[in-house]
Image (cartoon, rainbow, N blue to C red; front, top):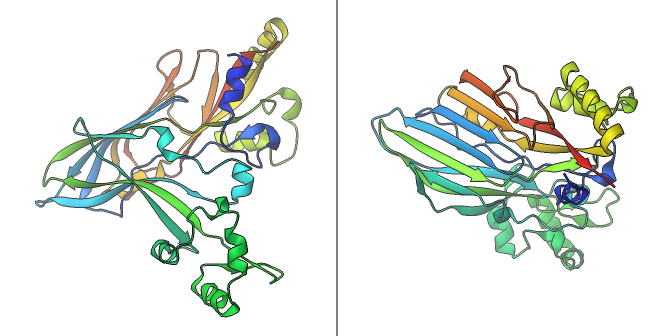
Length: 333
């Protein structure tokens, strides 16, 4: 992997990150088909393929009742902003359409809608914000804050009561603290006593660092960040460490190679919104090359090819989202 390719992987987001904040980027946790708890529709199977280049998930759903059920199905994207300055720096709000999200139902492409939902303190204020003509992406409107402060006190007090704005700690000015959550939605009919197949695919938004958190000389640090943070979040075990050390010393000393840490997150929890557990769950994770390393928190993992790992479960009820760590090697000059 060339250094230029490494740098291009560290894109889009800048966070106050584990260990080396200025040289890191955050993965955006996408995934998980979601609707309100529905005891009439079962998820018979979920096949999930995760790689740094593409995510593909295939579902089989069965309507267990004698009547057709039509409901709004949502694929939720992360709510923004949440400490947006820390996450994005001077970057723009991400273009969700750039992830090339595609959906097929029984093999046929379907039309999708992108819906923005604005919430404050857990309350949906979308229609109210639109009614006022306020910018949804207010952090990009540099004049909005000035216009807000010029409003009459009575009007500001009204918006405070509504929960649309908040007063700063010193009480000298006001600010907006709502979140914008984009949902990729469609109306889906589940025919009575029938099974349908749904497939999603998209380009994931990955993150990473310029490396340095896995090396032996930093593992003893007592900070909650760095290696300790990676070990907790990605379930790094002794086999991973041994493989890293073996590869690192041979590549670094002989070939002048270094490494980066790359992240891929997936929202697995929404799969628990259907009738009962996921009857059959299969996960395949693919790393870029045989020499790369990967670690994530899930049991019963087995290697099925030089670059792929598989997890198969029956009657699976997700308890946490998936967070994948890749160690990718590159040559430097």
